[in-house]
Length: 618
Image (cartoon, rainbow, N blue to C red; front, side, top):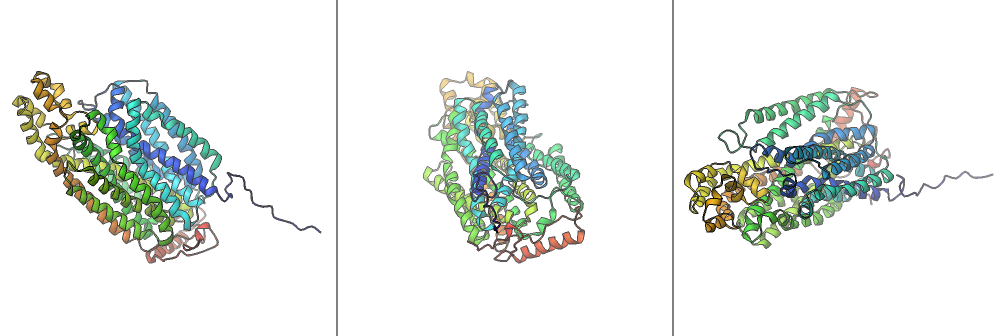
């Protein structure tokens, strides 16, 4: 008589049952997040080289829209589409959508590197293919954290998502350095650098990642997808164009098109909410917001993202427009050195992100996420207390602390979001968290640029007029330059151009001035000394607003409750979804909401799913 034996589990490297599969998933998703987020910021520093390469002056009348779309197009597309791709991942497989994201992103990178046009046509080519890159990035953003949540048990997710979030957040700052280095070599290299990474990532993902998550099949919710995409696009586009001057105002918030986009976009998002509450297979299950841990973590994430994006933009302008020229750097070199001098933020992320992720596996997200945002709020205040022409060690310590605070917040907060939802909703939840993060970054540019420009508008014109006339510029010409919206000076410094030369050069006045006056006006000290007081006024408004947002985010983070991990005891179906009933769905949602509100220290356990691992398990 023979005894039947069960064959040992496969130990092939790329099977989902392999004990090291979760590390394979982590390596791939970290590569994807790094590529996507580096490309979200790599263009910021490289814009002067890119526009020079396509022979276009972005500061000329009619060209500012090219500049805005080069800056914001990628982030806008990722923000709009990430929830849709998260839902598609739940329906058809998260790995399938993620893999396709690598392919789309790589194709976009190749097309960008081989732009065949110049002038406006060259700019349009770059903008369109940046949008294509954004589609690929949205696929990666939407499903990377869901793939990790599927691969790792609940008591190890904080570490994994911590590394993933550090890659996502640090990537945006690494992009500044990489962009600066590559722009010196050739502007096409800024885009081509993603091609080998994309090819390697595509091959690695296709041969290594497996579908291990719970699918949530159903029909695509076209009304929900359309209202969400149109509404968020209108809202973010209007906020972006709010930066441009309109009429006699320094900003465009009174522009009827901007107001119409904001109001219309907001109304469409309200309509989207009602559509989702009644859809049989919604794009996003709005009832997830009944889970306090999920709702508060996303609110805190939005506020943190707005503050972090604002910090990035303001520090770039501060360094490029004032501090670096005062310390002897040529304007053309300031984009690269701005990225280098902001390294302490990235180092702070790299230290705090994985560590807080590991600790949150044991103690929960609330302590670390709340304390992280409090630290960020304090650093905004500290940045206001140092002089505009600071000692670098002061700047390095404060920005390093800001990076530590953001790292302490980011990893535990994303882990809490993913732990709080049912297994078959992870793609949509990951997409919503990605939308919140990317929309926050887009909002920050419109919001904080407008606040800065409003602050500058109060004192910069008179300072500029007095400074120009004192060095021989005729009163009429000086008055005309002084009356230009401050956005011209801000964008000039942001792009690494010499501000006075870019303003006076086209008028012909600069060439007629005595050599000594012309040299002084276009030198490294005149504009920084002229603008520093006005800049500090604008900076105070921006950083106080960011500090308040961070404090509100800290309160939201604290109110999430204690450690909570959702445990599926049965497949969770959406309201009126085929195969389920309204009563069953409502009971499941109510059960989840009640559990979240109580915020137990340990998760409800069950042998039904991997989510059932007790939070204190080794």
